[in-house]
Amino acid sequence: MRAIPIVSLAVILLSVRPSAGQQDPATIRNFLRVNDQFCTGGQPRPEHFDMLKHEGVKAVINLRTPAEHRAEEEESAALIHCASAVRVGAFWMIRRVLRDGWTPSDAEAEAQKIGFKESPDFRKFVLEYIESHR
Image (cartoon, rainbow, N blue to C red):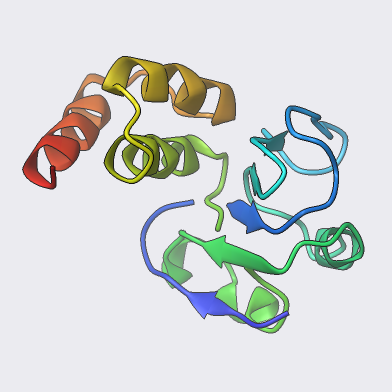
């Protein structure tokens, strides 16, 4: 697996084999298989990367800034995540509306399952971002 350096948001894991909707809460915080191609979750521990690779994950995108954690430790193994999946949910909500054509309310409902927590300022940012990029 190769590192994809992205500064700012969350974990979406790409190209996985297991079925959509299946969760694995014992491994990664707020881990959710969104569909047969994407998973989301919080910060994987170092031992999770081998498991993810074994499960068919092709890429992990780290949306945390280097100052938030020891980024250099996962650069060789990593792939999309943040600390707890709050930013992942926000990122996924934006993707669902702008790329997949979902309504903001449907996208927000799914984002909450992923880890997006109600924060008036953060929610306002996400909705304004969506509106400014339509």
